[in-house]
Length: 413
Image 1 (cartoon, rainbow, N blue to C red):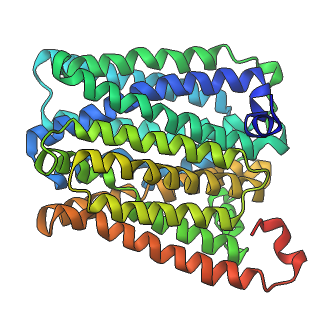
Image 2: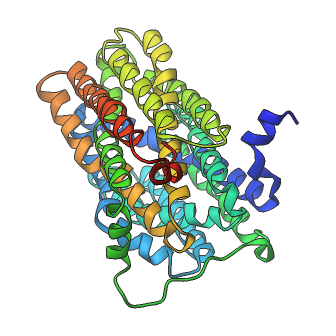
């Protein structure tokens, strides 16, 4: 293995990490098959970007409401057990969708209800799933493991939307839900067979106190950390809502809804590249985070003005690269900054900032698409992202480099 490969994949030397990330990647392929299918189903039923925005709000809204509490719970309980329960419930949700399709009851209301169920379970799963990964590696490997986790999650999107695009027409949507249920077995099996003797459990936070407030104080007491967190929230709210507009654009502008699946696949290919590039860096800095946000914003402008599906495919690769690189950078940078007993809560806050902001940005994007135009539904978010890039580069980074080295060295500027 070359030195670069050794750096990029160093946390995979642990058997438990290979098993956990492998199972998660397979499971996520099915999850993205279902995600793509559900968006297509809602578009068929309504032909409305607003309806897809509501779908997004239902899936990610629970994280906004209970995400911080779920992070506090993650720091108090056995994460292994929590992840096993939540992943099993996700498989049940896929089975319910498949049965509803067979019974002819797959209405918009049922899809919304099932999506809300998934959103609640995912909100509980997110901080424990990511926090459990940090228990499988040495402290110095956490940044690399988090980046590889992002690579596994985003890499699975290469196959999931493509499978949906290929199979929905000949086999129907019901089988897409079955695929998700079957692939869920991979992560459930990997969790059950994890070697617990090799797991390093962090000290559990005692009951009582104010764990959520403690996490807020931790974020706020470092001005640079708090400012970056605000930027991360703004970019997450407005820069990642392509899924809301693309099903309608694919049908109305590019001539076929299945372009949605193919563009998602191209985006995911870029995401895998961006995640691996971040994983290969010895240190993740704010400059690297800013560069990825810049690529995300520029590519977002390009996607907004893509007149055909093939053009969108080309633009989607740097869109995914910058998007995943930005997420992986924030995950790695923030985990390096916080003590082990608070990682679950910080992970929860970052998840709330990213996924929990979808209920805000998704409906806004949908309304803009239906009222102003589909191009604007993509363009406005890209412009906001580029504004945040300016704030990062010429505001925070420039000011932080003027401080004393002792003050900024640990913050990886």
